[in-house]
Structures are given as C-alpha cells and as structure tokens.
Length: 163
Image 1: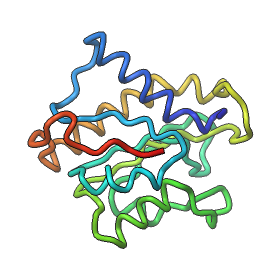
Image 2: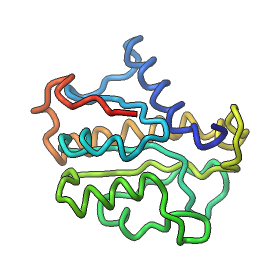
Image 3: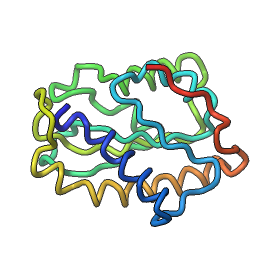
Image 4: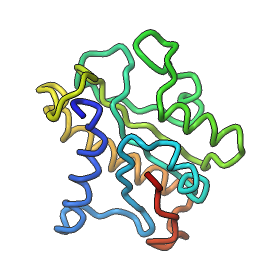
C-alpha cells in the first residue's frame, strides 16, 4: 500500500491504544478500517451522525504534512495532484452529499503522501507524521462528537462496512 496505507495505520494504532487504555474515545465512536473500499462505507456513513476520515490526501504540501478539511471545505478540496482526479474518499462524500446521507459533521485528516506507488511500507516523512496524525485525529473525533451529539450512538450500532 505504501503511503496510501497511512489511514489504515492510524486506525490500527488508535485501536491498539484504545484496547490498552491509552486513549479515551467518546462512547459510540467506531474505528473502521476501510482499506480502499470507500463506496462500501456508504451504508455506514449514512447511519453516522459524524465522521472523521483519515487518509493519504494530496494538498500540494510537503510529504508528511497533516491537514484537516472540514464539512464544506471537503467539497472544494482538489482530488489529486492535478486538481482534477476524483479520489475514492471524494467520490464517497460526493455520493453521500447527493443522496442526502452525509453526516452533520465530517472531517478529513489528510497526510500528504511522498509516493502513492505500490509498496508495503510508509515513506520516512509519512511515518514520521503518524504521531501528529493520531493527535489530530483524536482532536477531530472529540470536535465532531461535540458538534453532532454522537454520544447518543451505542457502540456497534453502525452497520459493518462491506469490502
């Protein structure tokens, strides 16, 4: 997966930290490893009141830069390096918006990739950004939880993503 796998890495580290009691997530927060099956997340996204998506995301910054796009900013965000390519996450959010199932609060925590070429390891700059991306993701989870009242959701109440 190379740098494209940074979102999967962040979710795995958060799951491990939660299981070890090192992070406190609000009740009802589900960490979902979607891999590359973004459209399979549509049923999950439609049932959620809020979502924080973590993925490699190009924004024209240095590799390893962590950025956050929220709500309306997501619709205006360029998809790829050339600004024209539609990303799987962009496609998912566009379909959710068009079908009226986009949650109240949505954030994308993006980590600028060094390379999206096939590979098994994260590049050095992206690997170095993992701790900052985890902290940013945790802050966004708490922010959208407060905005959307996610505490009303029970763990396990969201459908499992297919993929």
